Length: 163
Image (cartoon, rainbow, N blue to C red; front, side, top):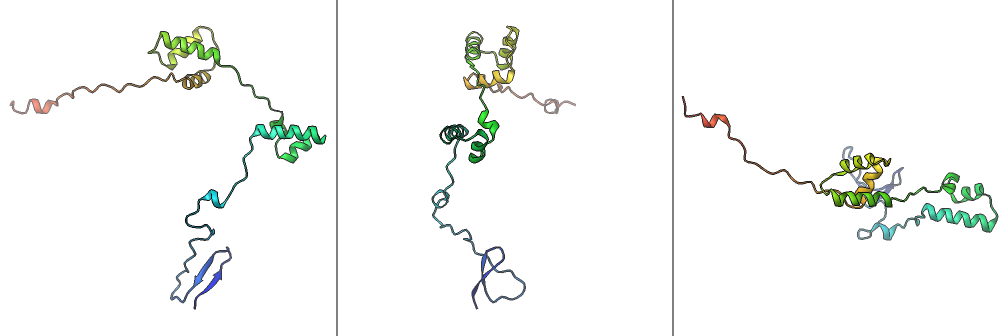
């Protein structure tokens, strides 16, 4: 007496004659994926569009269709603040140049000492910005492991025979 039963969740199970209150086994392959298939072959996602591309599309749509900024942003699903945002990327060449000069003169100085040196010279850069650039140009020093020394003898073994 085997037949297919559909549960309320859409999961199918084989109804078999059974004793007691044991639940029927559910099918393993519920999603319908083939055993050897990869996820990208079976299911393809939408192409991801970056914010820059969406802003460019919005600009073109506004010019071609004579739409307002509000209408265009609503249609493309971007907020108006994202559309208007102008990045404030600064030029870090001066910090790179100074850090490289300090690294050539004082190769054993670490980040903190170099940052304090720059502050004492009158530069007001945030230490987090300096650290980010410090890592980007690869100035992190290799941390040397501590030298192993001989272990001291315990006092109980030396005086065991004296009495």
